[in-house]
Image (cartoon, rainbow, N blue to C red; front, top):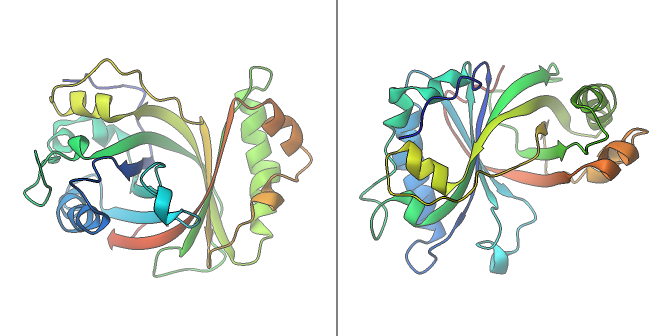
Length: 254
């Protein structure tokens, strides 16, 4: 079983993107029912995770939805160190709701990120519900760009540009602490696994909350420093998500 990672700590998100791998066994309706009624229901009863949010890529292609990780689930946490303890490890990944072996890692491909909260803006409007739309923008800086430069760009250019878009309510910024694929997730749960390498997602991620589905990516890439930061980046992630469901207390660093 995987050893605790001392670098995983502080407020942040457990951020999970996924796709259905075994489409011959698992359909979307069953996947969502397992997520909402079994998996998330158990998660929000733990001591360290009280809210859960599910989104889907707003631009997904129905024919290709199982080729890309179009599903997003995330869990705000006051201390990511909770994920390093037994209570978190004991969250079930096998269910009678699921076909075949009943183990989710045999049916779906899930990438998990542990994202530490770095910065947040104040909401323009207090909400009692989850944001209908998220625009997610991730960057892994190039070798010639320092982490400090990227953080400064996000805070001083990127997020202020996002705040000018109609319907924008709030932005949060995160830095990657750890990531795992199905292989590492199986090891975490003490299941048979492979030697697949750990994933390498973007190290910085901004999450912009909006009142409606808006594609504002062009605005985010037109700031003075964007051409240099993004031009030198090893990878850039851009996704517009539409809300599917919010569960638990629905608190998101309010």
